[in-house]
Length: 355
Image (tube, rainbow, N blue to C red; front, side):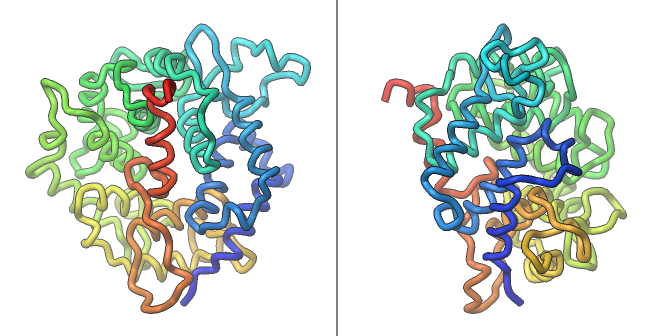
């Protein structure tokens, strides 16, 4: 059994170059797609082998073109898909920063080792505040859009990147997370929602990222019977196929190996995962021409490729001397390799502006 590293790196590179017309609907999430591709190359230690310095400079320049400012503050838009070619310098009211794209853009730039000299840090703090709703949640856009734990997680990671939490109401956001807790032990996308693997990761990571406040300490946020119930639910999501499902009694899906496995790792319960069985499931998800799919026999895509590699980096299984499975460790809270996380920690914070 081996991990087809070269094939997966080639898949990521191909998707960076371009996708078929059938994928045009992804244009509204283009930065996220770039993140999955660059993230895969980063985990595979293939950034330099799969790109030239000119490629990397071109990618950095394109990402900074999406860095826009306005009445809501500053952030990154998904792509220039709503901006006519002759109006790039005057974005419309619909061409505004997006919370998920801002998170993924910052990680992309860290992977590409940008110095972040162009980053409008105070503007990003204003943007985060504009995205927070009265109930403590965050919307994808300052003027509306989806509002759930995915957006909250992105706002928390960005605040942690900046090492400045003054742009948001942390206690109100934590209270919102707690209202999303389900009787099953996981967290729903919104209050009273069904427990989902992805949003459970977002909730657990966010509760560990947020600093202590007078009314909420990290140690008290997931403790006692609640922590035990959450761990039990996550562990039960590992199916007989070896992979994880995202909801109770569903089929295994490669992406949930990350969402559930990484959540268990953050909770200090990664040893409860059958890592060998999970690796065997993911090995079967590999496509013969590169990339990983959601399940064996399906077509690969950048999203499942990245998340599969990410969990193999967080929870590696024992493959004796098989070199193909040896991956750099990942920061499970930020969802980035340790080296990329260290670069972000050094260059993104508010104090980095003066350095």
